[in-house]
Image (cartoon, rainbow, N blue to C red; front, side):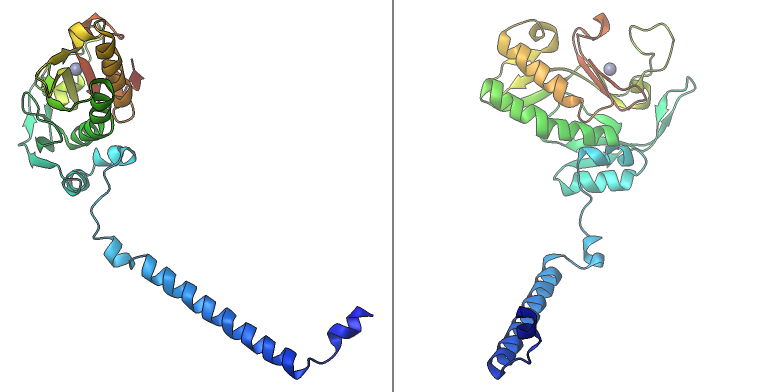
Length: 239
Ligand SMILES: [Zn+2]
């Protein structure tokens, strides 16, 4: 017989309770909508935010240099455009940049594709700096390049005579790291050297694989016994 109770017309007090409930629900809904409006910027404002600098954007940066440079700039890094170069041998580059302000100083100018520069600074920030802190309890004072980023040459240690990614300024070779205390850790001596050097060098090699397409170390072949090679070419390798 409960159903009869429900069908019974509401008393005045019940009617009043219903009105209060409906009014509160409306007020809560209005508050929620206000919070949503305040919480997210309107679309035209979102478009003005700097491009995000993160690993998932690196493939797009390969074709969109303006987005790449804007993302680097927004994250506190500086790049300058480098004039295009085209050599008869098939070597050369277009839309290359020089990384003029990074997280760490480099031993020589870093001239590369903007996408490679973006991968490099992400590696410095997300991998090198924390690894130096973890293994040595100090900062890196300078990153030592093994050779200029651009070199017109074939892939080292291979016989198929394919041009190296260096021939398109799309690769970077790292020889070592000078710590804040002045000591230099080289790939050549450190790879099988002191335990903390071995751990640090493997940390920075492994971490680079999150940002670069190919990462080669002394574990790969003799041609890489004294440096770490990073590139954004076709081959997906992490050794
Ligand atoms: Zn290389």
